[in-house]
Length: 329
Image (cartoon, rainbow, N blue to C red; front, side, top):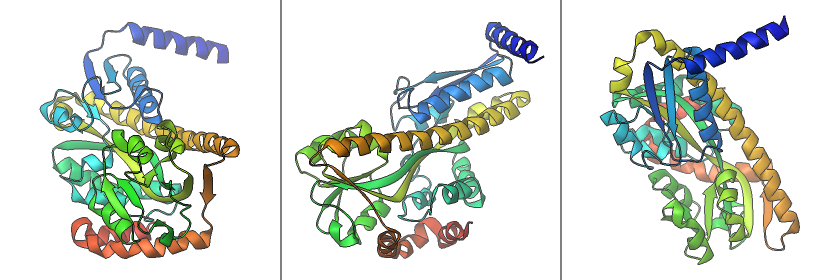
């Protein structure tokens, strides 16, 4: 019986692949296909084909082939692309509440983070984004950020004093570093390696995947596993496209997205674990590069120092929203 079902499944997939698609969804993203985000997009495309028996086709355009970073949201507004997954930072000019995710040490761990994203707070923010003319579908992981430096090991907050840290454009991130006496400097991500190499900046905050793939370990002496902030993506759809999309297939799109979200998050966690292992191996053979893990007491000191910025953003993000996150179990 098992063999019979396997054969039937293969036949179903073959038939699905031969059925001409009635509807096409254009999905654009800016990363390579072999990243968790890229593989999540491909998984979503595959599941749509399976769930609709080939009636709906998702065409994935990776590596900014269709639209570059910063152009995707405009393309969705115009209906020239249908799905994108911009980073949270791309939304803050239209949804200031998205700065919530920049607040340092707001999320205790992955479990707490996903409880927030998949719960009341996540839905509130999705509703605000949807009111701005997009259909907010789901949250995908990039990872928690870690601190690095080429000046000294960053173990306690005072270690960051007078160090220049590259940041993305964010009032929250500026306040985060200023409150510990550091000097935030906004730079495009493409310029970070050379800026570190030339000591234009001393340190960074990045998920491990960015730190490793961009070889920042070559120009940084110390990496601290602080997990102080989070980077993520919000998957959005063109509102005009979704409005006209046939109702019979909408539940299948949402189901495929739900499965793709679980898949992407799993890949992101696996990728972080594998990347840390690679960095630890590199540290063993390097005479200049070291990795530091904070003790619970050290992490608590960081949290106490950085939480002082929260009230500065009550009026922008919403005090109630911040407190809802803190109360989430």
